[in-house]
Image (cartoon, rainbow, N blue to C red; front, side):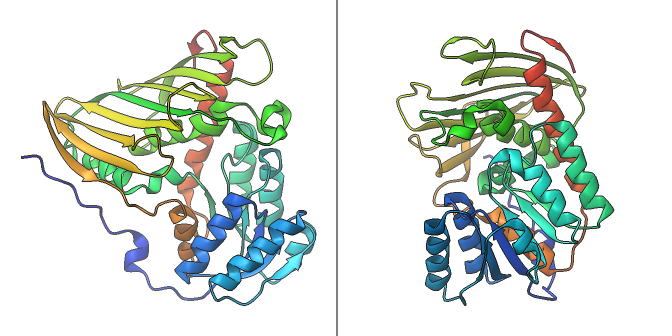
Length: 353
């Protein structure tokens, strides 16, 4: 019988909050409002201020606060005005091209930052943000939300315990039957890229994070647009191979508008000398996942729906802020993820990292 690893208690489970941080929200579209609601329902922070140029989105955010029985937040017209508010941290959910400079502006004011992915459009920009967080001793986190799936955490526990033995192969996929509905996603200067930086960032982060960030030795990749090799513009399909210096091979594929026969195909499989662990989305869902520990033909469930995971990264950041945490050197790994994405874009056809 295969044992199921229980998730270990986190730092937050052992720490009592010492204050209630006041948070500002820059961008309250669907994701920004979703993260705001998750933090509001957790009760670990105060929703103090909101800034978004779209009045209808601001109104929806105010209504969300009312539904959570919270006081109406202050409304700011811009980031500059938001920064004049009495805040402890800012949640950023704006177009990707704005993330780095907006994050730095907040950090330089001594404010903690929780930013939507990607933190920046490339490794150099990401390094600048992380250095700003370090210089100003501010808590920085990015919404790499798939780390917070119960199934992913239990798979990582198996890896750390050595239950799977020597991991030699990792296979990941994130295929979306749709494409982004905003024009800026298709402008490389604004987005940083296509499906790789939008979806592949989750895959690269998930693989490296689960394996405790081994060094990437070599990257090869192929990028496509409309079924043809990419010759400019934005990729809508990509495959990549990362050869890690531990000997592990990571293979990944991601896409927009794939004729997948369902809304999405999302999976992450880790294969080792003593067994495997597999995460899969259920019936094309973006939100429901199963995770299994496999040995030979045996399979034991690690996790299954329901699992309210989407806002956990934001709540984790807010709770750490409430506990008085400042700069966390773990964010240095954000630079490694960003540079790996840079190599995927630069190494179309194959090259060393």
